Length: 137
Image (cartoon, rainbow, N blue to C red; front, side, top):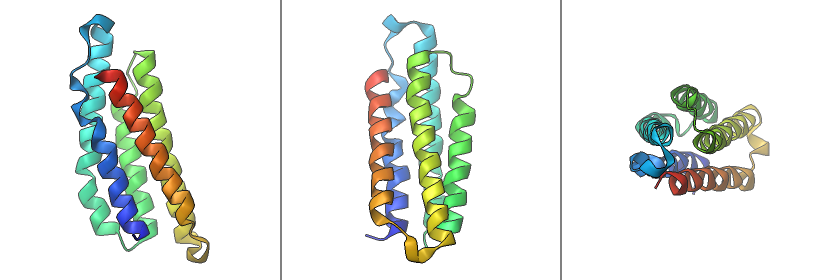
C-alpha cells in the first residue's frame, strides 16, 4: 500500500465519526450540540477525501490538503463547550496535524519517508475517531 493510499484511508477512517449525531440527552444540550457539530466536522473531513485522491502522488500537496482539512475541522469545533467532546475533537485535530507534519517531512526528504510513522499516524487518527464516536453514541 502506498503512502498516498494510506492518506486517503486516513480521511476515510476519520469519517467513522459521522454517525455521532445521536448523542444522549442525559448529558444535556451542550453535549448534544457538541456531538452534532462533531458529526458535521467529520462529514467535512469525509468530503475532503476527493482532494486527497487528487494529491495522492504528491506528498507536499497531500500535506497541504491534510492541513486544510485539519483547519476546517478545528474551526468547526472551536466553540464547543462540552469538555469531553472538546477533548476528543482536539485529539482528532492533533492526529491530523501530526499526519500533515509527517507528510511534509516525506515531501521535504523522500528518502527518509517513514511508512511505520505514517502507519502510527493512521492508528492515532483511528483511535481518536473511535473514542469520539464512543463518547457521542
